[in-house]
Length: 146
Ligand SMILES: [Zn+2]
Image (cartoon, rainbow, N blue to C red; front, side):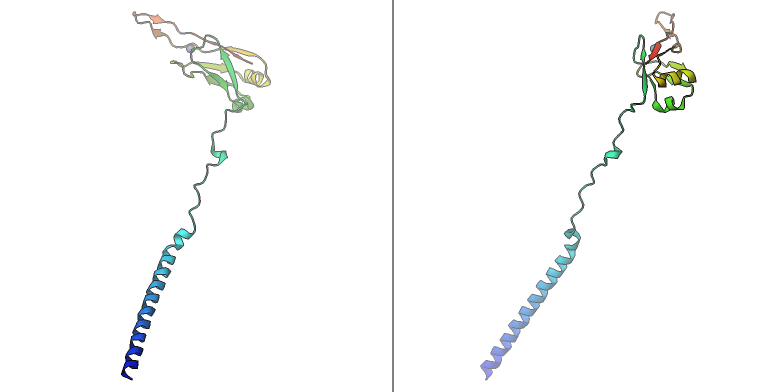
């Protein structure tokens, strides 16, 4: 009888230990399952840049004038200015080292928009020192549209 009791006792102890182990393993699985919940939904891939955010190409409605004796100037009447059909004081500095402008009347802007040739002389650039105590006179540019 005594041996049976002992055997039963051992068996119960083993069973209890197994239960504890099973419980512990179950908790571990539950905990890892819980912490893994965040990573179970993979982060969405980095959003690709939307095509609409890329800079728009130069507007095809702009009109650029041909500048005589050019040295870095650029004369462009924007499509918005053409549509406004008002007088435009065009800054043609571009990459030149001095400011010059082309003043276009409202009529001239309308003619440029209509494709009619318009030739306008720019304002005169400021005189600059020639390095010998004198001045180099300013210059103008003839700007031709269309
Ligand atoms: Zn110039």
